[in-house]
Image (cartoon, rainbow, N blue to C red; front, side, top):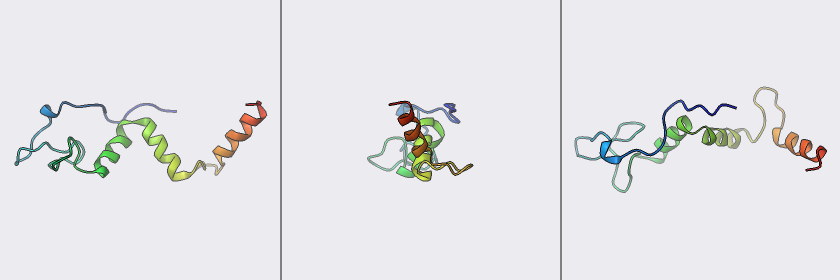
Length: 91
């Protein structure tokens, strides 16, 4: 399982974020001005896209939610197989 990030993530100093023509910070994903009451991203969509590329655990969680534990390649129900394996080990 890969834990390599395709983009650096983490916290950023808001004072160092580039500013738009109205003096507001620019979104870290799409570079539009961040609206009031938001800090470094302009929308939940941009937060989601950023997290997909910077947090491997978030990406795995989203794939699991999408596929419901069914392997796209072999169509095995991985959740059921994990339960079966644990039962066979007495866990």
